[in-house]
Length: 291
Length: 291
Image (cartoon, rainbow over all chains, first blue to last red; front, side, top):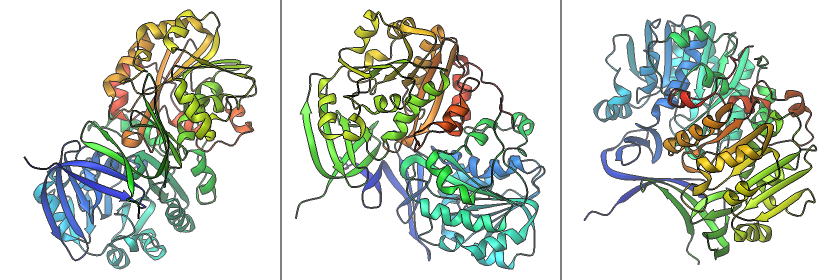
């Protein structure tokens, strides 16, 4: 009988996540990182980069719904979207659910991630061939610097700032993102965990706060990331994620989300005390909630 | 050199949490369960029952703030509180932060939990000697059935429904809780994870919904429980956790909570789609949020 195998991800050499593996269905090393896909017992297929969980079939929808629909239901008429990173395709899939979208450019640095997901992770990669999608294999930092196009929404769907994604947590990069966004443009970014990466969150929010009129952070639950509590940053040249949220559009939307709705959109911005107090200098005020 | 030891908690034989242990500082078996306290590298001291994490010094405040302050800031003048379970003392500590409280009765079935925490977990057990606290070692189900006193708020701070806490997830028990609550009384209960115990959540909410005028569920982040996403149920004879929340009292409160505030109170009730849709028949409507 075959020995049962467990995937393990250990954070700070002190706490870890274990997931029981049926088998490994993809394993290859690119110029940037080790890319693996496993079949698990509890989480469906699971994509890892350098041994860190990126996405699982069980819960990837939460990450992708929250990074995409918060800006897309806040912007009144998003037509052009830029995704930096997002090689598994889950963010692209959510963006293209919006009928107003005319073009979505996805810039992924590592062709091996795109190839692995195209072959083995159809749940996320299902829109790579959509005629509105343009997949570019390039360095997102370089792309943003040289970009001549403008966009309504940018989504920085990066991995952790320890591998190829490190330059995406940088001031110059966000200056370029600011410049390629239209009036009222919004950028959301993967912003790590308030429990494990609080200093990194401050750095990113302070960068955004210098350039953008509105800066916020919002939280959601992620079963397969350290602590289960994870964040996205939100920055806009003018739009407020509360006042400008188009509630009627969310309610009438043709696709039935598993996680996202107009309640969770607003609840996600309501921060626990340790975040609200420590991040206050980087955050724009939100209007008071009434009933 | 001593071999490094890891504590492991495995759920559904397929996914698990690992925490690195410095040493075990308490280990004893009661009539009800195995009770252990560990010193960890990442989470301070950690209490487990039958190998399941109950509380850690790093994040117990989140659980205890959310189970206690949601009802206590919604009730206009809570004087008498009943806690069923809660043997580590963390809920008692949070209840006694409210100046209006005249008496808090805590009914814990297992004296070994109280003893272990009294000796080794002062962060939670610090109010056992408070003159307003009455610690009763008894079966909470029997206590509720025979209780002649009435209370403003009841808090069912139970462990999982697989050990001694199983009878606390029962209809007859909640009939007795209903009867010992004053007009406008509120009961909050530990209600497991929406990802791992959704059927159990439905059972508990349907029991509450039959008796109480207002029934809700609210979520919070728990780093050391499966998935990191956890819930409490809320039921009241009349009070709404949105409309009746005393925001001014929260803002002026003398104690500076680490997690709880008036924003997170309301955000916690804003449910993701899979919960909102599947639980709608058991939940009372909440007033629409405005800005």
